[in-house]
Image (cartoon, rainbow, N blue to C red):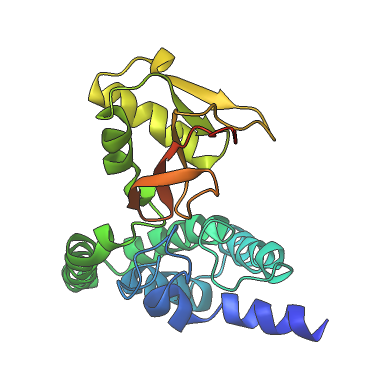
Length: 223
């Protein structure tokens, strides 16, 4: 119970929502600010405090309830699990913006500045999240197809769909790849896309991120 309460407060923290953001690089570019614009949070808070009607009361209750599911999970600030809260904060900000139209210009400026900061960080460091997005597998597929052997064998895991996609971009048909069943090993002499670490029966062709291209070495029978 104590852990859930602590997670609840951490997930509702304005610092996390506006500045720190999601810890997981799959969901968020680190150090680019939070998933909620500061001005959206301020407007939602102003509406919750100053506007009294049933719709606002409903949105406040919905916002408080939306934090419960993320609070029972291990990760704090998980953007996907908090996505309902983001929508509710946006809905809360609308009546506040309608009431205080005189401050609209300042609000727009603040929103544009935070958005510009995010896009700057995204442009300069977003691509460095290689292990999270594609994991360098485009270069990996190019390396594998350049070996000229077909099919290229793939583990039926998260890298397979990337390999098929980038294979199409490379001009390689789906038939250029073969998915391995669980426990199945690629045949000797074949080209195989798997983890970065080489198999005992393979030599490394190339490594990018968390994946690697390997050539399975044919077994030599002892005389």
